[in-house]
Image 1: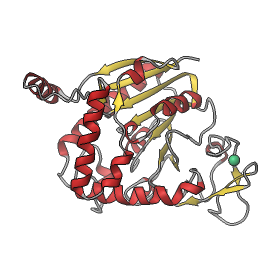
Image 2: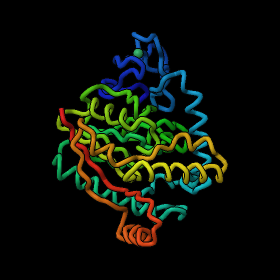
Image 3: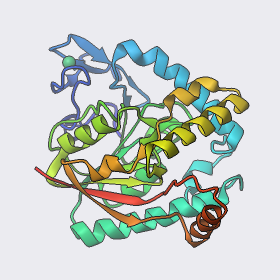
Length: 307
Ligand SMILES: [Zn+2]
C-alpha cells in the first residue's frame, strides 16, 4: 500500500451511509476519505479506511476489545512474532493445531475451487469478516483482494502491518458493506457469518456487490437444521461467554439456520462439504446415536448469483 489509496482501490469503495462514491480528503496523508453527500470524512488508520457509521465507532471498539480479550484467553490470538504469518499452515502457539488444520483444508478446497471455476483470471475477491487477514494474505498471491472486518486492532486487520499487506484492508460490516455495486467476482465469509445479526441483509449485500457471474462462499461456520438447535446453540454460547467473563459478547453471536440458503432467491446455493473432517463426522454420528446431537454442520456452501 502507499500513502494514499490508489485510484483502483478507491473505485471499489462507497459511503456506508448513503452509498455514494468517496474521494480522498484533501490535505496531509491519512486524513481520510470524504463523502460530499453526507459531508462526512472517514478516517484512514494504518492504511485501513474506517467505513462504518461514525456514530457506532465507540460501540464497535468496545466489542473488539472484549472479543480480543476472549480470543486471547482461548489461545486464538498471540503476540508471538511470526504467529499470524504462519497461519493456517502452522499454529506456533500449539493451542489450536487441529482447528487450524481444518481451516487449512478449507483453504486448499477454496483455492482449487477458484481455479476450477474461474480459470486463471485475476478475480476481485472480498474476504468478509477477515479477522487478522490470513486468508487475504494467501488469496492476494493470485487475486485482487479486499479484507474487511470490524476489528482494526493489532489482533484484527492491523495484525499485518501496512507494508505486509498485498491487499486492501477496510473496516466495515457485513450487513452494510461499503463497496460499490457489481464490483466483485467472489465474496468469501470465512468463519464469520455467525457473528452478524441480519443474515438476510448479508446475502442482499453480497448479491449487490457481486457481478452477474459472481459467487458467495460460506466456509467454516456452524449451520443448524432448525430453530430449536439454533436456540440451543445460543444458550450454550451465552453460558460459555458468561463463564469466560464477557457475557456481552453473546449478543453478537447469531446461529445460522440452513433454510437461510434453501429459501434465498438471490443465489442458487450448493453444499460442497457437510462436515469438518472424517473424525468430526464420526464424532457427530456417535453423538447422534447417543442422542446428544446438536445438529450443527460446518459445510462449505457456494451461492451462485441469480441476476
Ligand atoms: Zn455518504
